Length: 288
Length: 340
Image (cartoon, rainbow over all chains, first blue to last red; front, top):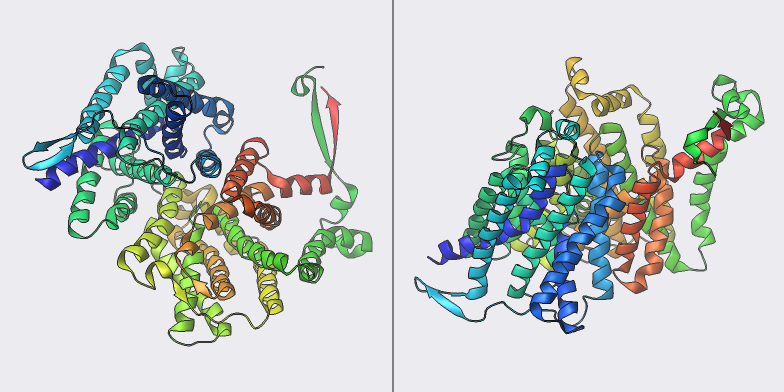
């Protein structure tokens, strides 16, 4: 029972971490290696607003979300747009931006003392004999809600449909008057927004540390690769596969193996089935 | 003022001396020979004299050895990325494997330093090649991501299984007899590696490598096993990294998890981008610039990582050709604006 409940929670956590990454890659084929940095940035901005400026929690959250979305959009508009299409340069440049943000934060802000955000709801509840705190339940609920909202957004709004069109066929979308660069900015902003949402939901469970940035990046990459880059259903299913695998190894082998599982999952998937469990790309395109 | 690209363009012409020294007639006069040999001798002599110049500041002699280690890694990265077409983001794997093999050979089997370093180079190259073999069919982003994951995995596995000394690492390696041997072994290895690789890429095998990079299908169609050539490329690049790793382990007399650290993956890439990809000498120049910057910023802790990440980003976005290609162009050609 333990394993089932914590498996679900862990899977929802992973899905939250990966959503932004898969959204950006799905729409603009941009592997955003600054994803983890945006996650930590959101937490830190929220902490600053909350503790330095003394804003109410709700307002701080809203502002932090907005700011991170702007940062993400600006990152694309000012820097990444210049190297669009050169995938290796994109990886290196976005990774460099992420490193700069993370290590800059470590140097300038996130050192000494612990930085924590308050939980939305205190207390815990017993589910089938296992005590679970409200925040963790909230992770699952909000995770599901976010997935639902994004699904609705992509399939039933103008901007969402435009993004979907871009993802399916960039040229056709261009001929229909969809501006590919503006869409890419929008997707980066949205992706950063979901990284920020994930951060603000997940960070109250622990403290804000720079290492979380690297951790989130590895997890997001693991989920997206196992699920097939750019595939939504794949990403969600993959987060359950990896989530449960992690909880099982933690239960039977030890906590050290959590990251090992994720990295092994990446390597094995890429070797055995590079387009991922549910990837739509033709395998021939990805492999030689 | 009208924008440059609207009314005029830059015309580039080869300098006379460049044209004359391209062919066999280069030996006709000292001037042409000097033109050809100048930059090469500058690098060789510069590197060989550097330890003497740095004599008053032993700390910077240490930095020089680190520069050489990073340079070897960076040359390997450049070779693999621009001649074989495999972008390996996990240089730390090579350093770590080299360091651990040297450490095990030295402390467990009692082999002396002059045996462990060559052995670690060859064995380490072999181990890295075998590890990366299954990933060789992948290309582009996918190979990059897997190779980025390997050093992380290696560090976690050593931590989780508590093997090879676990988090403490392996201590008590032999050091170099003195700091001169330390520096000159590395400098000579670096120069040999640099000129050997430059020679290699112009041989037949280099042609196949470039074929694999540019159009692997057609190489395959010619009946050449591309995976084997990729493996050979990985072996060459990882051997260089392992050589660096083995020397590093002997310099610090210690091998540990931190030798799988991010620095070893990111600095060589930054150096290659700054120095100019595909030039092989460029990465060395990049390291000569970046590593001292990173050392100067050591007091500021992790700020140095942020700084070279920013330098890397600026170069990749605004000056992607790199310093070496820029310098070579200025050295070989006139440039002037022409109205159109």
